[in-house]
Image (spheres, rainbow, N blue to C red):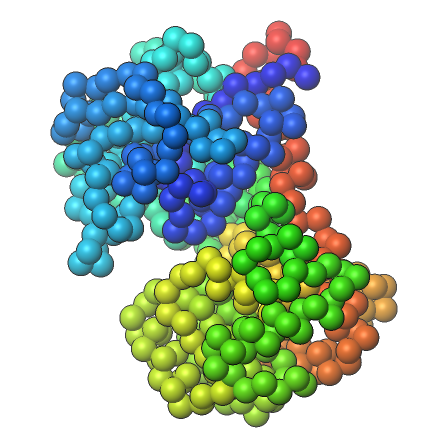
Length: 489
């Protein structure tokens, strides 16, 4: 195979900066692609956390004025990650969340902040650094959506482009008056360009102008072409369906490995499932749950939002209580949901425990100590927590949507008889169906031989990046071959 040099453009990458699954993907993909002779460098904004984390940063380019101020491009490494860090203090030197200010609202200059990221990505693709000219740019989500636009409306040749949608609900729309501020020409503001319902659509631009589109599961790639899940972009996605594919995410098996996990009290394997009891005890102690060995402990690690279906969990609390199921929830998000879960925990001490916020150590403990993990999302592009749950022998209870339906095999009679079941699915995504799924999961839990089979099946499932990386490498090579058919790869 001919080696490929590529650039990833992303607003976050694990372990430097993370707000969700996007960072896990962009952090794991470069290492996974290396096995396929793909060298993938990552362009990332220089947030304070990133600047603090990088080692031996070397300035490789200076910008006198990048959308409102001077900036530097730094070459750096973090572990195996090869990074190009956009050090633009006027855009990124801010505390806290990379997208939201201390008042809880989006930073008012997010258009400029992420247009700058995309613009530098495009310039890198056109030879900004003579020693690094990528054959392909892989841009992620709306924050990098303008990368393809800057390339398309330039008079210079550029690389092939792939655009991955991690969540179609977040689209990055900004007033059309910003077009000259962002350095986009007037002819870009058309239906076939960056215009989207009278605004500049960052996500729409990526979907419209990139050579190929991917999303993070095959089912989600189909769902978003329908009106109810297309978020206003279903027509465009249907139009470009031949350039759209779904590639299911993986997880980093070195980070999520119950046999070597130093964040949990008792590491274990399929042969030592009994050691999970120590983690379950530690989890109960942390959340103040009663130590009753025969109770199913249901874990939740989630953003608290309508999308994630956590309002439906509140509706099913009476069923959960009547079944004797204990709940350990870790999450943050909508203020109303945070308050409601706190109140439920206060009303039912010993049976419901809630931790508001995000804690990586606690997330690992929930995966290692809970019996089941609930993911009741109304829509879910891929989902990663259910993949981690499989790895840890924590039986997923999931809505039959997107990547959840692609990654979990429902424990129906036939799947149990065939020995392939790994979890519980429910559909349609309603509170009644969720309640029924919890009752069914509890019944399966009470049948211990079946439950242990579900656990072991999950732990043996391949949730790594091996297959996804192979699919991405094949996509890259097919795209480059299509652009340069005379070059054999």
